[in-house]
Length: 138
Length: 495
Image (cartoon, each protein chain N blue to C red):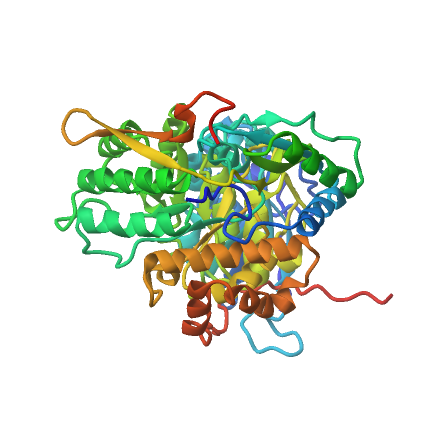
């Protein structure tokens, strides 16, 4: 399957040129970029591994794309995403997020159902890959 | 014939001898009054009956929405009457009305009235509305009256907690950033059984929508009991979430006949793990604030459907403008608010609708007459409401919608998802691909307003559902004259 998290998951994977265009857009708005990776893509996992701190001082899109590729080289079979942060008063949160690498095979998620009283069902989404230890998943 | 000057009577004996005085004489017209930062200011659009002096009419509105009655009463003298009186301080002719050049429309006036903050109970929209619109709209000397806009003092804004979630926290909870959210109302509006209804939810969410929605009149009818709907919908939501790996939701409508039942339905939604519930505007201000408090305590996103507003927001001459409703609803505390599409099947001129969106989303509204915003409105860092565009829109309009409204909006395509010839999932895919395509193109610096149709056509080359959707609805537009347009048009200044 193909996890559809992030801004552009329904479109063909972005090329480096397209990634650069998105990065430049974020920089033009005064936002800070960051790169994160994970092998646990559960929708409630909002804490992917940070590839360095958010790049608050970097104003050059090429440097950001360089970091994306460095992360890809170091972590071949994981999910990688690029984020942008806006620290304006009233926002102070993430304002862009899109996936730039996926593992070659995405087994996806199963749904565990636990019957309770009446017809009430408790649902747990679990990741097939995450049944293996970290580092051995993809 | 010379009329005697009817100014404010300041001599106490004259003012309070029994009988009838004009409202101007009783002190409700104060052209030299400077509103305080702590005053409420309202602008009413009034249409006086023939022969009624517009300033007297404005003074009467001030009186009848504060302390006055139709005759002098001595009991005023037991109070700090001068503070409690509302003060009409300015009356302007509405552009394009009256006997001015180029119009034969009956005269309308903008009456500006200030109210002391002592008149209002902290944190109570029920009290604000009872005070400002509870009496004066039936007043015989006025043919028509509309509360056009309101400036709420920041001191009063701070007595409310506001939206329980707000745009920022909603995005953090859903983990979705940088694009509008996509939704769809379930169709047909009525008649589906619980299981069939859940099927439509499942198809829409699996195809790529973020949210699906109960319609405003889906409560608990013979064809579908509410508990069955909630159970089947949460099955659909969780299955679609596991299929896609992203958070999904369905707005479960907890509107009911009384508060006890609303709380029971909300608790059940929470126990099933829903991240969002919805209520209809017609439940009333008191219920809305109660449900807002409940939602905050239970980490629930609260969606507000503005059911019924069209009965009083649509005609320029009479009612309450939706921008006022949006302000009250932000204070009362809702997270989503239907605020118009501009290009869809329901009323809403683009500039006016952008005004509503700004009321929902800005930290501080500036005066913007071309969008119908009469006053600076501070929001004291109150959370922001996510506007919802819903009603007769389709993917062929995606570039217009994003150009008009930006990213912080929920775009809902009910018919525009479920009506896709190749099925509901195809409809959802078409909408999601169209959305992501336009967002990506905008970020790349493309002119989405003018090149949008070509950008979408290009994306459709690799997406059959999108190609089919564009083809099916290519001729659909809702071009009717708007009933509620701004009175002020921005004029270009000489360079």
